[in-house]
Image (cartoon, rainbow, N blue to C red):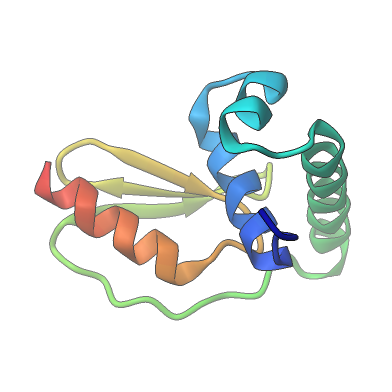
Amino acid sequence: MGRRSRAEIARLAGLYATSGMGRSEFCSRHGMALSTLNRHLKKQRQRNHAGKEGGGCPLVEVEMRASVVSITAGDDGLLTVVLCNGRRVRVGCGFDSETLRRLVTVLEGL
């Protein structure tokens, strides 16, 4: 497998945050070096910390549908989307909005 793009690494790091797995297990399952995940998570923490002081993550316009009950931003820099079926999706700064849209569509169908 070739090098992953920054967007792909960011997507995987976001997936790690919601996976419930340890870093080593997650990296093993996704064929990712532990150092790559650690480096990205460190950068993400630094951005989140700087964002709290400098205005936070940039906002992304979204269309609200009946299936979304609430969207909240936590002090940890994570955005939580609660669907009407009770499922929660948490993403951090720099998430891939297209991947999130596809994930919510799949979760709505379950």
